[in-house]
Amino acid sequence: MTQLPSDQHITYQLQYRKCGKVSCSTCRNGQGHGPYWYAYWRDGSRLRSGYIGKVHPSQLGLNFPVAASISGVSSITGRRDGGQAESGKIPTHA
Image 1 (cartoon, one colour):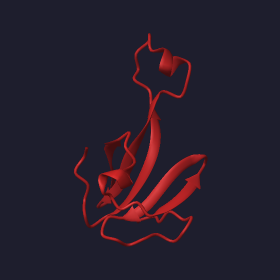
Image 2 (cartoon, rainbow, N blue to C red):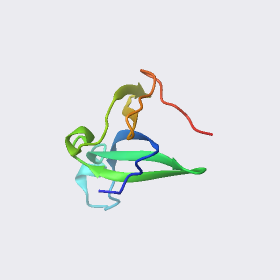
Image 3 (cartoon, rainbow, N blue to C red):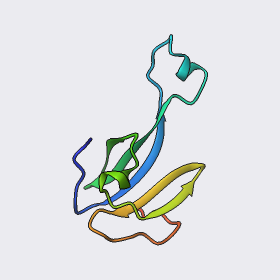
Image 4 (cartoon, helix red, strand yellow):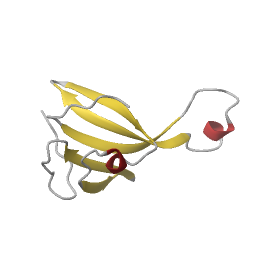
């Protein structure tokens, strides 16, 4: 698992990934492999991401507060330092 920053807003998201192998029936006939949890945060103006794995972030001791649905993708937002986003909204950073 990626080392996550402790002082940044982090968004958790479930994603499917395609492996790129021509012979892979999972990717060819479906959404791909997964779903896997990923974390997203800002580092200055750059968007960073990190692989969490198949295990729900709350089971790893990560702060996992507010659930939201955006374009059919389940996203979870929160701050690792204990702050919480307003329910149903994902904050944006300039």
